Length: 86
Length: 136
Image (cartoon, rainbow over all chains, first blue to last red; front, side):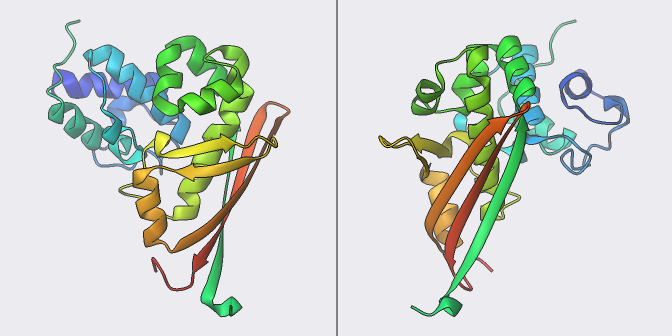
């Protein structure tokens, strides 16, 4: 697992309101089907911006950007986000 | 006009006011600015925790509209769905570019909405009149 994906999973564990641990999430699992609310996905988005020091552009501010670990990782990759230095 | 030519769609949602207040407290102005239009923020009293009930109702309205559109992928951006308060005090849904495109694809011709909040939650319902068979 890359440092960036590990950070995505940490943020999901803290802000996603999911019933399972971030580390146990299947990368393609639909986070909304697993119980993440739309409002929680906004918190995830903002926390990712803090962690990766990025800003999601308006065209990415939609639920589908945050529907799975892999979708989030793809969006971060598109933005050239680097894993935070711990 | 024949009733068979039209379909009524309904979307509804409920939102915890405390969750919105917590997000404002945690993320501040950034949370408000990314989700809500300037008009929405102004109508609710600004980007502050005390505005949480009105903002929660507007978040529920955005969600209700997304449910009415019946989209999963390619959903509209949050600010593409705006709650506009009219001079008389009632509110209407106004659609920006991405939401308008999806509404047109679904054959939506008229929209009506209502919001309320109390007992810790905010709720909104959007009713749409659509041309039958559109967006099937």
